Length: 346
Image 1: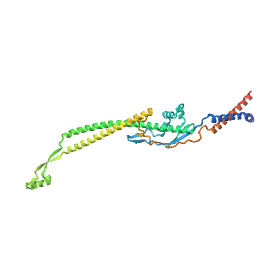
Image 2: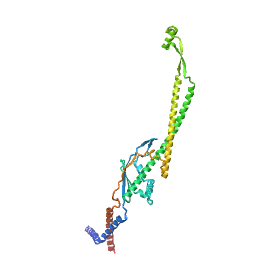
Image 3: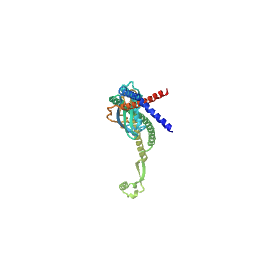
Image 4: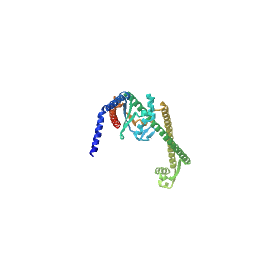
């Protein structure tokens, strides 16, 4: 047991002596690593600046428009915010910035979304080679993001409305045919009914008329108790059918008015959808009304100003230098031990 402890002490002493003997070699590795790190952060590495812009997004279950209510397919904010990573948004941003050599994936890696699960607030961050470059990239990206998100849900809302109006029009057509058929049947029945009917009734059922008649004849009213008279009255069935006919005609007018409105709205929606699709394909928005069916108008808002720090976020000079010095020291120690081992083994 004592021999093993003695051997361990000797081994530890030899390791320490190897480090002391080769301290210059270790220092040389540390210095070289430090110089290389300084050369990298000061000369080779490009400075990276990060611009940020805060916003809020609160997507309701549905939103009301002139053409009815539009229900969003989801209310998860990340389903909306992740549109900023879409190839179309990034490619349009690259084209506008003139970054012909940049790739979509490369630019995508420069974008960061920060948000909390239960909060409506979020932050977009984009990196660039200078504060101005980072800010320009961010603002261009946000503009394309807002436009793409608006067009996506506007197109979806227009398609949904056109489909609903088509179904509604068919229902109104069916309702109109049924109402017209009902009107025709009632009009046939109405044509065979007399508007006035003649009733036989006792003269004494009308005291005023009985008293006047008795006076004219010079008799007592009691003597007229068995006498009958004829009276024409409006046929109640005729009157009821006449009211039904008037009601059905008004109902037909209302249906036809709703059908005309339906067709007018459908044409407006189809024209706007064609304008949106033209804008998506060619960028020509002259045939589109930006304010029509803008279902995202109240859901998404951005801050008026961006935040651009004066200092770069990369490269991290102090951290890079510290890591390089540690790695240099470790490599120097390894080489020193290897040198001693090689010399002792020969």
